[in-house]
Length: 119
Image 1 (cartoon, helix red, strand yellow):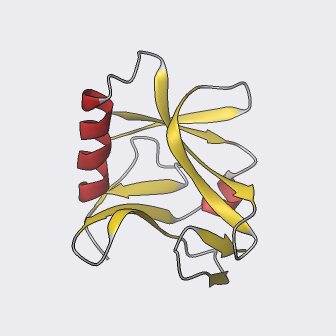
Image 2 (image 1 turned 90 degrees about the vertical axis):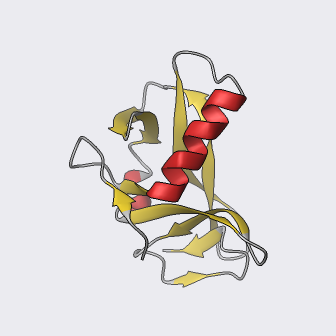
Image 3 (image 1 turned 30 degrees about the vertical axis):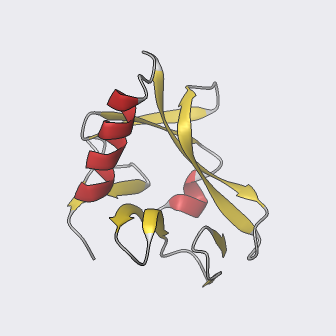
């Protein structure tokens, strides 16, 4: 498992690896993410295994819980926390794989693409 940055709030259900944090900050800077937007992490029904991950920039919503992870505002719908608890988000930039990955201890099965799971 790679090095991890923990949330300022100890109750954050997810953590970011150093690589993921660096890549998210690069994206925020290069894409000029507006003030008031944060990184949304969540789940939705679908995908090969039943649920897939959500990762993108969005405004905070009424049902969200917000966290600060290494200076990155993180928004998670409180209904999704149960599925994400203990998940580490990592970033790979190699020949075999490129992109964000999710290491979720709650997943009872995953698919080959790594972006869907069953809980």
